[in-house]
Length: 435
Image (cartoon, rainbow, N blue to C red; front, side):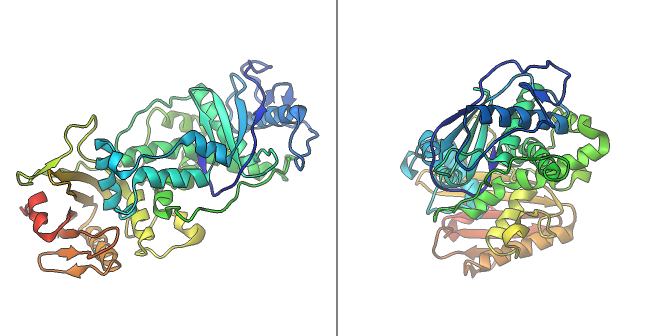
């Protein structure tokens, strides 16, 4: 699913119908009776009538085939809906009192990243972001592309259509069934899927005006809502920003076949996506967190997933940008390579809870060198200072108020950094006693 900035309203419009693509397998560049270099008569200012929609879809599919060197096995339904209709389809997120155990576990992960504090929830922040920023998605269960438009006149955005058609190609030809449970692994997998689609979209745009005559459609733009969470967006946008250069690096190694092969041997970390030269050999280190909690604190060990998460290099970068430790703004923030987060070797984040409704976590990170571990620890202290945290002895800190008001203990041992969190200072040793 491609995410950009956007807000507003529209109508519903059907584009094409499911059918076997004329021309048959092997005839790249011909779809639904249209060649990739055909001229088509389309006027976009007043919306698209049925014949214009068919022509635009057919030629766009043919051009995507030429670039991606894969043949569409069938035509995909395309529907355009309004922003309000999209929000209605996604529904309202649960409030704090109705969060499931798994969601309560996940809240600690995002709080540890200082992205979502106690004044909001992940489901709420995600719904707000998606309602404002999603401009299109592909449904594999329905083999359908849905474009979300902010225009009062039915419009089709070229880039979004190209992007989602690549997802349809992926679904028809490549293995998309890999299930990953850890955050960093999920982002890495999406780095291939979204990176492939964004890369093809960029190649398509480069040919427009150079070797192809293209229909100039409106760009997908809009205005973010006041509740938009930039930190969450920065994490979720990583596959779209870093994925294309990862896919390009694979293509340089072995053409599109190397890209296709990556769907069978997916990257294991965002580190590999951000630094393609580390794929596939530089595997993440296994980080362990011994349970040294007292009898009142426990791990979430009754969920159908591991008790821990791994957030990875990309989310660490987003944490430091969101909290002003890494000074980047505008488009520069979407370059996820920075000395303070480079050198990540592995991490494990373990949420805890007690019987009184308290929550905490232990976050242990492994770095490639002691110097890189020290740089992370220094950056994390700067992050805490940004909240006017009170410094105590023993590496302990207290944020007195606000969405991240809590106690913290920060320690470094060589290449390893450990962060312990609890509601109050006295609870730090209860969550994770010092060695």
